[in-house]
Amino acid sequence: MSESLLPQPAGVQALQTPVPARLDSAQLFAGQREVVILHQGEAYRLRITRQDKLILTK
Image (cartoon, rainbow, N blue to C red):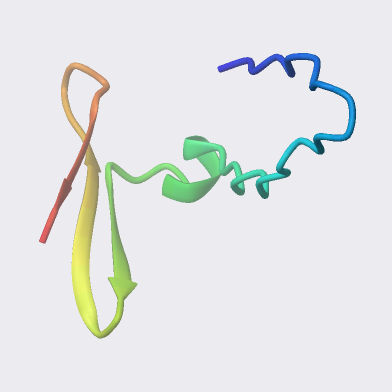
C-alpha cells in the first residue's frame, strides 16, 4: 500500500495520521500455524490456512 500526498492549497495543512504498527507474520507465528490474541478479555484465534490465508475467529 503506497499513499501519495497531494499538494495542499496555500494555508491548508495536511492531516497526519499515525502509521499502524507492522508485524511480520513469521515472527508473530514463530513456526506455528495458529496464535491466540487476547483483546479486552476475549480470546481470538488467528490461523494460517492451507492456502496460506489468515483467518481470525472468536
